[in-house]
Image (cartoon, rainbow, N blue to C red; front, side):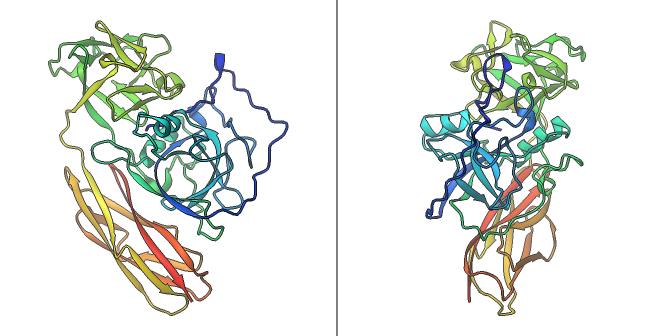
Length: 411
């Protein structure tokens, strides 16, 4: 998922000065559109679970509803976007405010981080999760994090210092009561082997017998079932158990979604401890341990054992349009989907980010990858003139992809 945060303090103690929360500064600034990498985090990513934030502005702890007046907390590096900065994310249809720090975002901005850089815009959006299923919440984080077919971050438009008039989608990013992820996003699981770059051997559960406490090792790759692991969300799973670093040795334990079981598989081949972002799954001889991330001992090459994973793309044509408020016209847009890997899959179509008074509908809300959909937009007389970025989203079992439609409303 690529998210690394730094609100974890010594001995697991979380400390925040709550006595004086500075108000958000009201400064008139120009709206700008930036291409950013968007990740997600929530209640269960902290140790102990919670919503502590580094730069409280509107909220004493992470939260918000997503309106302009009550934007949701997001985390990033303060040298990238200053605390208190508002943004609007078209794909989610909500406003967010910078109130927290993010180590991975800082690394991506200042140097060569786990997701790229330097000067890679990376923001981490809060999705909540308190009171919900921790594994469902963390899997939702992964399902909403968009990547290219090669695993590199997919950038998407974000409005910095947005106007207050943009449409807000009231659906929660993660519904703690039902466990439903935004727009029913689903996270696919990968199944395959992990070969270590230092010794050329494969990660393995030597007994392959679902015994809690079994220590992982590397051994010569044979293709045996003990070398096949499932990765989903933030969890490396074998026989229903999760890879855990409660001790330095990586062992298989009952899945709890706890902080010592959360991992990020990165484009550079490392498998990073999400909580600190400072340690990785690495080898020491044939032992598999939680250690530093430098060198080949911390690099792994994944090979799928279930064939090519399906993937798809989505585009909208035309990508820009002008509409006159109240003219009674129906503005049609082709939603073009294509299979980019594996087999075609069924896709759900959504649109967010339209201005108040504009309405979008699909001829079919579900299509098969490779088919064309039709989006029709009507603009009511009371719609405020302006330039709007609408997100046309296709969601399938392997993930979610978004195309941006620029709609200019005139009188």
